[in-house]
Amino acid sequence: MATKLRKYLKLYLKLAKFSASLEMEYRFSFILEVFVEVAFFFVTLFGMRVVYWNVSEIAGWHFNELLVLLGVNMVFTELVLGFVFIYNLRELPFKIAKGDLDMILLKPINSQFSVSLWRPYFALFPSALAGIVVAVVGFTRGGFAFNPIMFLPFLLIFSCGLVIAYSIGMLISTLSMWFINATPLPMLAQQLLFVARNPYSVFSGAWRIIFLTFLPIAFMASFPASTLLGKLELWWLPASVALAVVFLWGSNVFWKFALKKYSGASS
Image 1 (tube, rainbow, N blue to C red):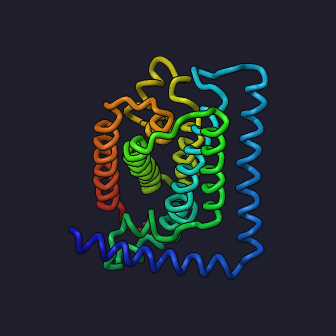
Image 2: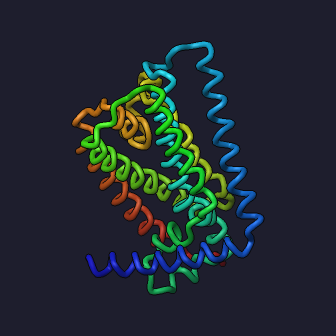
């Protein structure tokens, strides 16, 4: 198991290096994409500021606390989009339609790895850095005391959230096997990342249950940000690990099931 993990880590680092060199060949396009991403981030930030001109808090979150949440969500979203969606899951419907998946299945490499993590997209990472800056600004403006002890549980919940987001994206994108025009499916999964920028406390009724269990977006931003702010609830730790394991296992089982039903692009 450890040997296989090292093998795929080495492979991924080589793929990342190749992807970076490829993007640098079109530097103007890369810089433009970075500018667009950062601009979109600050437009979102301005919109949030406008809302807080009229209210002092939203669902118990003050403006500076929401800055921390927005910063955490931005880092989370850009990592998931950059590593999983842009050049990978978004392309899965096209790979199925064009027959590229047939070629992938012939390679001596795990097919789920090939379709979901083959090529990272680096233009989003400056926005992730901007998210860190915004979270720090929120901490500074709010006068919150940073407790280094809270960083470890934050990192655990945040990492499990990444696994959950990846798994949900994989589960939804795998449905492309059964649809002729499946391009909206990865985009649908991607929208959950933007819903996650809302505090979990704004949801009520059935939505609270859904976003805690079936689509656990609470672990993608709200719970990690709350942990940094010193509002950790201990049950979040085992729950995040359990959900990450279950969703990752489920995505792999569903992918293998879909492959058994897949008969090639020609059919």
